[in-house]
Image (cartoon, rainbow, N blue to C red; front, side, top):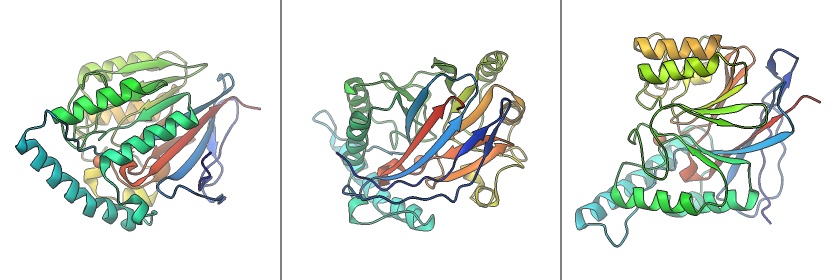
Length: 304
Ligand SMILES: [Fe+2]
């Protein structure tokens, strides 16, 4: 039985029409006996949803993997990438004021396995992986990811990050994908290149013409006038900014903001946790780096 450190960072309330943030300041600490993990926990109340649905959201695990089939060059590359992230994951964590210590100084492979084992213990309704699952497309990494996710005893939805390709067999497919839940949808969108293709944009627009609430899963957060200063102050590389984005990306942002269907965005890429609104009453939760133990638990529930 895991005893963990829970951060109750936000509570979203709802009227019949919209969701509203309450505050991010509510923090409750509990005992912890696995100091690798640290949690952010949010709750979204959505009219039309039936029951309560716990989603486990992880991101930026940046897996580097060797196996028996790896060549010498591939092994060397994995070693180099691991060494790089040993430095940078700590820089990201400390730069964002997030937990980091000996417990987080483990390989990306060990971290991923711990996260999947946690999911198998917590049994969320679905495990969401919002990109940079692999540090780069490499054969052993792809083999491992397909095998580990294939063995995962539960539903999962993956999107690619900017370190990855459009599709990865056994992990994610290309294109917009919609998954149905009781009264809401999770829609996976590939925005890893800080834009969205025209066919994907059209597919998303079609889904938005249906009134079923959508939780968007993608890699790169969007930056809108509504987002707080903290997200506005991150390096522009880490966001899709309407002021600098291409035409498709501007349309993507505009659709997210204006659509009555899109109610929340779950993403990553920043390697630091952020909880903001991208439009009034619409939360955008940027999960932090899974390779350093960050886990986001997102509960979607019906109004009382
Ligand atoms: Fe990343």
